[in-house]
View 1: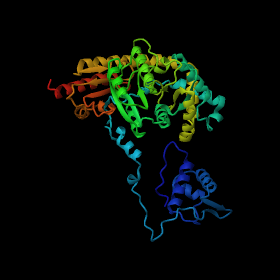
View 2 (view 1 turned 120 degrees about the horizontal axis):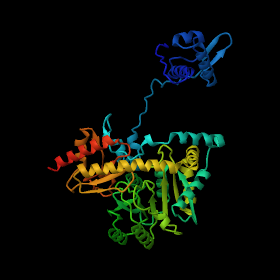
View 3 (view 1 turned 135 degrees about the horizontal axis):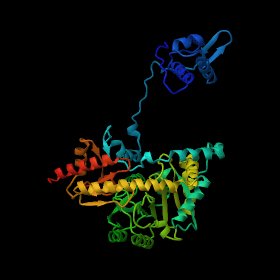
View 4 (view 1 turned 30 degrees about the vertical axis):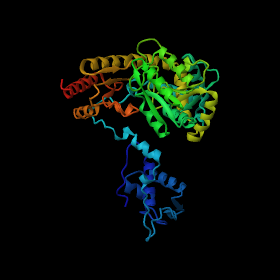
Length: 488
């Protein structure tokens, strides 16, 4: 006994000794009332100092695993080890897959991340549209953390409010007002990123039309998953170069009733299309006529590289209250800080706050306060200037490479962190992916973004975390492989 103890670097020795002895007790290797070696003896057996063993014994005694008798030593406490199964007892093993709900099974079926290609070391991967961590502003993040902890550290480590951390709420309200939003009658709820915000909104919507939603086609895959998991029937409308096809949209609205619309008007995921100002106004008029609320995904709004600023739908709606805006800095700042927000009519936010409280109590106050202090210190504008410059350079280089090497039918993307490519209708990007992955390059086939099973002739190229050299090499390989498959 005691000959299998191994020290791990970077962890206090006495904690490792405590955990090792606790494991022996729980497994029954050390029995109830068994006398333990003296601290000096065990230190020699384990190759650690006596003081480390003394500290470990102290912790074990505080936790009720051992007890000490003056002048006699330390003993394993009665009933400290786990009881073994009765001799005649058959361990009961449940088939959990058989007990999963319909929603859980559907979540597994829709989980492309779990079944997707894994990037081996050295693979050029265009699958991610996360920000490049090399741009992260670590020094100012550290400063913001220390500033806030010095001001109210103990408060931040306690429970917070379901609605959010008030300094951050006030900052974001001003931020949205600076985008042209009329805040009259509106309020804000802080969430654990965009996904929780969408989940909460969908769960709160009354389904007068049986759970029908209308959206762009293709659209954000995370939204598709959430809509399906909530039981919504999705109708996707094709996109023009300046946004959703209005004629097809109006035809669909005239055919049946819908409970809501979901739209990504700026740097749309996956196409990168920016809906024009004229089309945004037309959309608002249409949905107003048919009395359909709009969930607006503010995805990537800040990553504009060219052209005029286009106001979000919620700003164009003025004092109207039919637009629910979902915001997040995840694609701009730091996705590891799980903070998003819902801006909507005050009555809706009041209900969403109660749903949020029942679901997750509140978003991490520590995360919220860190983000607030970082923003309050004036870092967003400086960081955005640097990020836009770098991403614009990568965007232009990626676009140039695609135009040079890939035999596409259509290339779209006006900003953000990705481009979208369409090939002729009979082309299969899954076969292209299979051929490219064997050569060390992967990307995201586009059919997962479509609401109707189409899109096998499309692909998304995420460039944010790929080096210039790899962008050139990878896209050239994709283009050459595609050309061979097309017989060119």
